[in-house]
Image (tube, rainbow, N blue to C red; front, side, top):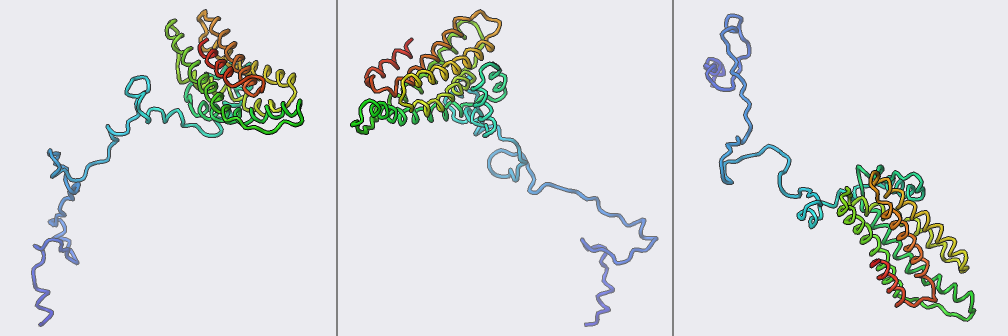
Length: 288
């Protein structure tokens, strides 16, 4: 077919056709259709699953919503506690170092924006395993110091005693102070109390190594120094937290309880006290 026959066809009415050359007189009359952008597929907003099309991305209003642990719904929701484990190594080390300098008394101001429970769980668990293992070692060394024929004997009961004492103290004592302060009309935060008391036990991790020394007088000196540092850390920070309230007896009670825990940590590794008496010591400490 002759190609010239195609060139004579009118193409201006065809959609999508663009003339190669537009003359000046026809340029003014040539109208470009207005662009109309439309979301595809359209969101008709109708009910049901059909016809809804693609939806715009919005923040979810339901699902894994972080619940506040202050209400009962948040207490039993795991997601409500994730914020208390959002700490990095530098923050944990800084808080650990603060527990070795009790004179500052500003621990609550450091954790006010982000109190954590990571230190409580990590420190208490480490201390339980260290006391149960080093307790057996210290008992063996003390027996070997007095009797060269003493043989190694690992007592698994140390794990139960250490777990009851450390976990029970770190959880029950801050909770008791929290409810007591609430009863007396003073503002208190259970999470902050758990955080502070948890970090106060960090010095006993280092003390557990030194208690391996088979000299009784040195063991007493070491545990009294560690207990005093830990007790001062708790007492001074608790005093700064309840400033303005005449609750001196609570500060003294916190100091004495921390010293009692220090003595318990020393006695748990002493071979002269049977495990049954140590368990009675733990229950009596928590009851008091």
